[in-house]
Image 1 (cartoon, each protein chain N blue to C red):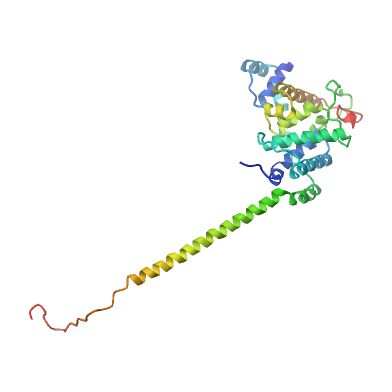
Image 2: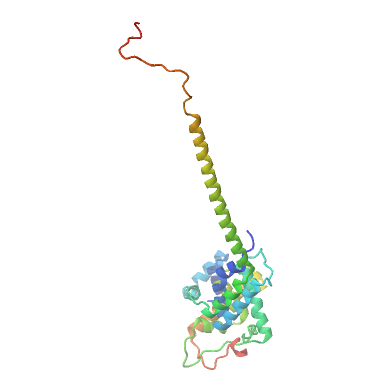
Length: 130
Length: 171
C-alpha cells in the first residue's frame, strides 16, 4: 500500500473531503482493511481514555477558582435570580390580596338596598276578586 | 452569547486538556501542572479571550504556548520539538509490545500534537491548522505520518530498554 493511499484513508476517517477515485484506489489496495482497523483502534483507545487529574490537582485548583471573578459573578447572578423570584412571589401575593379585597367590596355593592315600605299579605284573601 | 467564566471553562474542558497534555508529555504529574498553569492564566485574565475560536480551541492554543514556555525554561518538560529527520528506533529481537502512550512519546511533537488535536480534541484540519499555525495540508500530512508511524511502532514491537525516541532522547 502506498503512502498516498494511506494518507487518503487517514484523511477519509477524519471526515475530510476525499477524491472519490483516489479513495476507491486506496480502499482497493492490499492492506487497506488492516490500516483502517488500526486507525480505528487508536481512535478507540484515545476515546475511551478515562484518566483524570488527582485529588491534589482539584484541591489546588479550588483555591484559584474560589478567588476567580467568575465565581463572584456567579454568586451575584444567583443572588439576583433569588431576588427576582422573591419579587415575583411578592407581586403575586399582593395581586392576590388586592383581587380578594376588591371582590369583597363587590359583594357589598351587590347587597339589597334598605326597605322603603312594607307589604303584608293576609292568608285566605283573594286579592284578585276583592 | 458572552464570554464564559473561567469556572465554566474549567468545568467543561479541564479533563480534555489534561488528557491531551498527559499524552503529549507522557507524564501525568507534569500534565496536571500544565493544566493548572493554563487555568490559572485564564482565571487571572492573563490570556485574551478570542471569541472567534471555539472555547476549546482557544484553550488548546494556550496549552501549546504553556508547553513551549516550559520547554524554553528548561524545566522537566521533554524537548517537544525534535528534528523530523531523527530516526525512529528499529525493531529488535526480544521485542516488547509498546502501548499507545509509549509510541506517542516517540513521535516528533508536531505530528503527535496534530494527531492528538484530531483524536483528543476532535478538531477538523482547518481548526488544527489555526491552532498549530500550519496549513491544512501540512496538518493532513502530519496526522497521516503520525498514524503510519504509530502503526509501525504498535505492530512491530520494540525493545523498551535503551530506546530513546526523538522526544525521550532529550529529557
